Image (cartoon, rainbow, N blue to C red):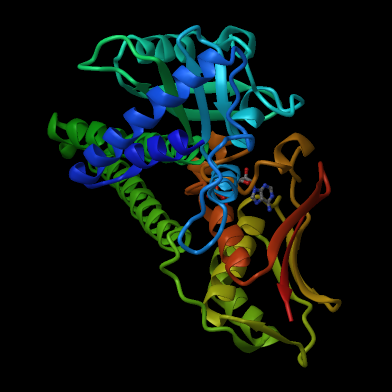
Length: 400
Ligand code: ADP
């Protein structure tokens, strides 16, 4: 066990000098312990170590080591020359076979058939240090590890007496990286579409369409529409990035909900009447909610705006409030509704039911993601129910 801790320290220690000293100490102890365990045929690395010395604080060293290794999130596995496991910690057991109480004397091949792990440990036994080996597990939950293997008892890079592997869990980092890449590729794609249209119409104008007054007007209006789409997209991306990055500070205070809804309805009145949609504020005059007024206004603007965009002719968008353990603010429309299979993913960035329609009406695909993150920032959430052909209801739940 002492070996393992020292090896981990060697792996983790930032200072080169400290690593060299620790590595020397490790080599001496590792060689001694592996030779001793070879003599006794069955090798173990658990609490039956004969080292009963005490730490300066009068705590038994074994207990300290056990606690350290048990508490580590990184999986640790030591194999001997014959590729048999001679030591492991609970994190490693969980990684390979959670039902086995201790990994001891099994062959590495009995634990895993993963060729990347096997070849890294094999190199370790040849005296070669390996790092950055990516290992994936495909159990009930997919996990990704960065495996680092160091030889134990190797002199000048020659064959080793054993090898120690540390499995760093990089599942979260990998997932975030995936999300980041997906986001970047979505943003590039979303920006490229209006940009391509702008370039195409400018080229058409340059190639003679300028002479034709009517076409000229039409092309310019298409260029303007695409340019403002790019503008809204960049605004929404910056907004969402700021909220997700924790750079938006809320100033929650008592807010007069009726007055706030009235303001939002007034600012969207022209758009609503252009689409023949009626906006109705059903919130009672006395209702106060606890929220950041500007951010709540932003959430309601996005939801009511969607209600208008996705409504039918002569449609109606109604805002109401329901009291309870939390305040519920509902935005209900009688539009086309949303097919149930889309509801689960509706609040994801760039998720749209009908991509072409959303683009056509100037949508960025980020409005609901912004609402979701702002609601979460308030300690609340946003939910949706919808019935095809009847309409949708979006509800913001706010803690009191
Ligand atoms: P967009 O800019 O496309 O409106 P949102 O994030 O606001 O982006 O909405 C994502 C998608 O959810 C929309 O493209 C649309 O398909 C669907 N949606 C949102 N609100 C409604 C609604 N009230 N009725 C029907 N569909 C809606």
